[in-house]
Length: 343
Image (cartoon, rainbow, N blue to C red; front, side, top):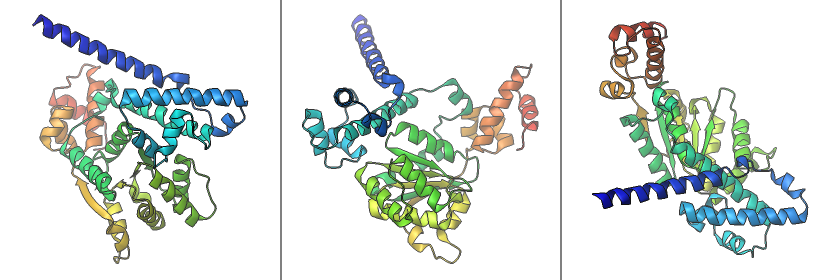
């Protein structure tokens, strides 16, 4: 028994040490990354020092995170891996400063997302942003299939069923994921501009050229593209996504309401080429009574009918009411809190 206790203690110390090392690495330079054009203005000696620093950072990262050189190379757009191998040995004949900058951006972004993934905050617990409902499991299955098969997937449903939370949580825990949140004003040109900015590509006034440049860059990377509020995308934007996926084989997952499904089908089936690319889909149904009670407490389902967003908000209202003398377990208190909302 004593030995088991000692072994457990040693294991916990090792884990604590590793976490501390990762935090130290992630906090390097306060996670600030200079723009490439700023690095190019530095004296040659400082540029050389920067490249050496990133080379060391890369070695530590690969060792501690147990990520293969090939996987890291794909993530930064160096698909064959030979460039990264030469860089690590100090024998790279290409643009060392640019490659070092790409590596620093990716590594620090990876570590930030990893810290967020492992950090379940009090606010998350209160709002239910971490949950394991059937909807979440099925939505993640759609994502996994799209990633494995390098195809398109769609997760759709009524407002408030948790689609955006799932997309956000996936992005936080997968450094290679690119999340774009569409709005009523997102045109095809806007979408391509956002993608170019996230991929750090030079924007072109020629939209066709933009589509091809984006596809070419995504092909180099081990990326996953998630589009939230997809019902706001016009037909041209959806068609551009189809062509980008055709050219690059990047997994694309669309999140939206039932309107998105209608848009993908088209009024007269004119978007058959687009809808035929959807390899899997899932309609979010909301929480059942047992899930709602497990995640948010008693009596919530009676008023929200399993709507995820409304349930999370009602739980917070009940908690606020409890500060003024209400009992959060009491149906009357939940009813009073429900009267404060549009349900």
